[in-house]
Length: 540
Image 1: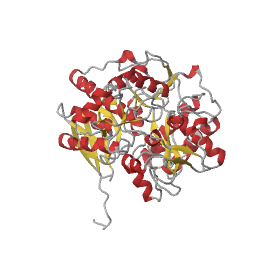
Image 2: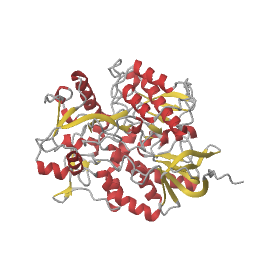
Image 3: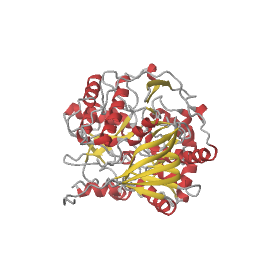
Image 4: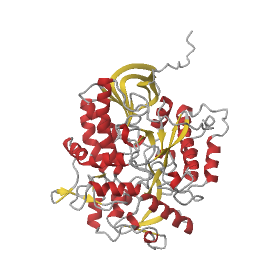
């Protein structure tokens, strides 16, 4: 009998098949999908819209040693220096030596980089000894990179927007596809695939103040762990030194590009004092971890909520033309950057850690690849050099596409078991599923921020492993996954009893030779992997 009450319909499940399933629509996911288009059926799944990614909002650019006074060797040297003795030199070499070919392919797809008098316009950012950063559309590089790629994607690839991947499918130890649910909850996709490429981006949105869009919640790390993959370098989260301070702002923090400091912008205290020369010989263009800690220190010393970035010494016409997005955004908020100081604070920006992969993007699970920010190639070490992220995304996604084709044709998985070391079990209890994302973000920023210490990290772990409440189903599996990723990050930071790169422990302020290791996590526990010049090169 019909009672008149609404019936809740079960969500529909659609069965799909593809040769290649790509999860994520940032630069890495788009490049991988485009390279594979025409070589088999490609289905790209993305949690938000096609343009919701860190890549799309990137302001800076892509590093490439093109200048007459530059060379791959100098670029490699700068990258290794920024990584603070934790880079995989083989991964750095692969990325830098592949930079020119990667840029040329982007141009062939319709990307137009800015030029000056007919040659590429190069700018300098923090940690670079030369001007080597290509940009497009001034300070809107990400959008100008992705828009022409997206046009080609829509013609060649099946795209499922607003689908969150909830599980990777496995059979006999191999990854065979994925399960994804629509954002509106009324449809599921069961996607069988010859292989899966995770390009799901970073995890900055775990923090209350982040330059990342809301889709960056570390999903790929949780998915890969559950499927049997390894993750590494989770403690290394880079804070961008200069996000716009908006006391009543909500959501993503607006980034003030490092290129603005590279072109002559000066950091000042609230009293107007320039302070960066006191912290590093490169002053405003020092590596990001140095600049972020300097800002943090000066803010704490003065009890200030923000500091200033002064660009008023630059030519107004140049500022408006080179940084149109920043100029317009600030002007809408009553800040004329040609005349006014810009209020800035550090904000969570880029994760150096992620899914452990070899030089071809292969994980420990046959059939499962990863590229982009979700992957840990070892290129960035303990601190990413500015504008190396887009470079890594393009170079390694191109390599992933080659390896994926080879896997589909041969079924072989070289180096699938690259680590047979003894694992130390981790005493991690079931996560606290009732933690709202807003509260989690506050905890992460407070206890796992620019500066950490043992007391704060243990407090964070205690909060994350809190008691479950009666309304534990309110936030669901997604929030539990967020807290798992946060918990492993806290564990990695607690275990690393030193300061290196962007990981700074106030109770262990010095770098220690004993910690020139990569902390690797899996469902088996944790192990340490010594970093050396030969690290992982045998797995190529």
